[in-house]
Amino acid sequence: MDQFMPLWEVFIRTRNGLAHRHVGSLHAADAEMALQAARDVYTRRGEGVSIWVVPSAAITASDPAETEMMFEPTGSKIYRHPTFYKIPDEVGHM
Amino acid sequence: MYTQALNVVTEKLGDSEAEQRFLERIDAEERIEPNDWMPEAYRRLLIRQISQHAHSEVVGMLPEGNWITRAPSLRRKAALLAKVQDEGGHGLYLYAAAETLGISREEMVEQLLSGRAKYSSIFNYPTLTWADIGAIGWLVDGAAIMNQIPLCRCSYGPYARAMIRICREESFHQRQGYEIMLTLARGTPEQKAMAQDALNRWWWPVLMMFGPPDHASQHSEASMRWKVKRFSNDTLRQKFIDATVPQAQFLGLTIPDPELRFNAETGHWETGPIDWEEFHRVLAGYGPCNKERLAARRKAHEEGAWVREAALAYAAKQKQRITQQAA
Image (cartoon, rainbow over all chains, first blue to last red):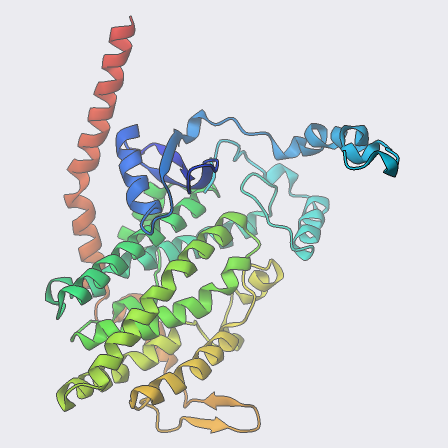
């Protein structure tokens, strides 16, 4: 079997003013070839104005088994939202 | 299309409680993501289906690639090139989706080249004339769209997202094919005959693309339960027939089925019997082009080996240089 080709994650900025967004992944030997392949595969119809390629191995992801521990605590912290605070109508928009 | 960093062994969780939770998520129309717990059978079914789908895209480049150099005009040539390039891209999206389930692309390619993996039976038929390029776009891509639109809502997130991208690109394929057919059907008597001949040869194999009839489909039940598949083979086939017969009539071409009739009661077109023996024969490797297709894939893979090796060697050397400079 072949030697493994490194995996890259591709992020594209669809137009200026927007953030780069994950669109998919691909295999390439190095960053330059990954960028070239990303252009060929993911921007064939004017999908973007900027590309990032990131080695997949460089991404550290949260563990789904710990989803509750990670994200549940914010559920009860409703005082972090503006609607938690009562302001009389007379004050107007705030 | 996600990093596989967290794809750890999940079998130890395979108790009924985890399975129950999984089914509840499926019922609630939640998407399953790569690192979520899933039954091993679900993982296997997806790897099998997505990799076959990817292989089909890649092998599907061959029958059409056959006509790129002989396209009748620059406009047709540019469109065909773009379409074949799309198919290569679709193969990549799908391989990437399958990889999130813990199989490497190298492994999948090896399964295809060794003949162990299957791909769509349709690509084992030859493209004898230019009209076949029209028929493939109109019928083969038309059938593929019918199959793929419900897959955009498949329970497995990466597969569903790949399908959304693919479907968006696929509609150009079908329209360019129909346009070719329309041009031929309105051309000289010879051109019209060529279009009719292509329809004659592709019609039945295209109906077989939807897979065996419901009563004989062994993977359907689990696939429906897990919401990988949303409609049965026969349902999708019928939808395709109902959509395509009027399109053929508009072209002034005849569907090669003397038993074809419209059932006014059900509102559906009914066809004569499909030759399932032919389907099984082609799938088992005895279609007109099975050997040729695999030989072409193997040749491309072997002849491209030096490019992959050189690219990796260059990357390793560059990395070494940077480390040396830093030291």
